[in-house]
Image 1 (cartoon, one colour):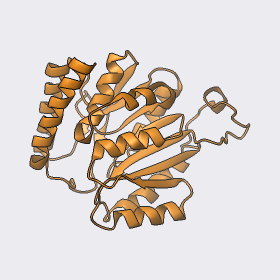
Image 2 (cartoon, rainbow, N blue to C red):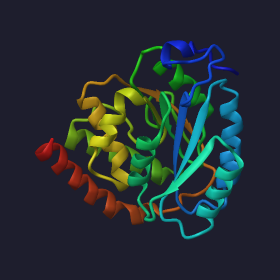
Image 3 (tube, rainbow, N blue to C red):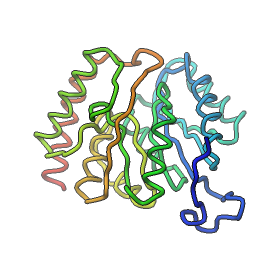
Length: 255
């Protein structure tokens, strides 16, 4: 299925065939110890993106892997011109995601996960963004119509985390993690202003976008992961709480 889009309307200098010096779509994917699925997942995503009928790039944001992930990223980048990677040298999801956003060149940027690649989200999000309905589209695991197939403990953790965002930051949405897409020209500055990294960067990004009154839209998604998380949920809790405290200080004191 090819997404119907008037590229000339959105890409300065677009040629009649729709090609541009910069891609229409950038996909940023933080990766950490993903040697088991990174090659197959990246190749599958590449094939599905080709079906959208627009130029794209895939940015693999490696962060501190201790397996063969870096080597595999390098091999994928050498083999496929649409794939590029960089490494920040430390386990830091938020820092890698932010760096990927700042490096992205596309008109639309999608923040994805190596074990997701939900093309239905891509099509629906691109439609909303390119038609001017939103500046950011967030894939929600909690919105009515969503289907979360993850273990119950992780689903409950998502609900609890979102409740904390509502109480502490008066956040009006239902989710900040997982897949999101946005217009780069509108929100790359917002991403650059975020000060908290690791697991909480994604939340700060969405909350800042909402506070800056950019139109943020949520759409329900079906979450089906390809493997167990590379970092244990219980081990993540202390770091998440610590970084939420940092975010509270950043947004209330520093603004």
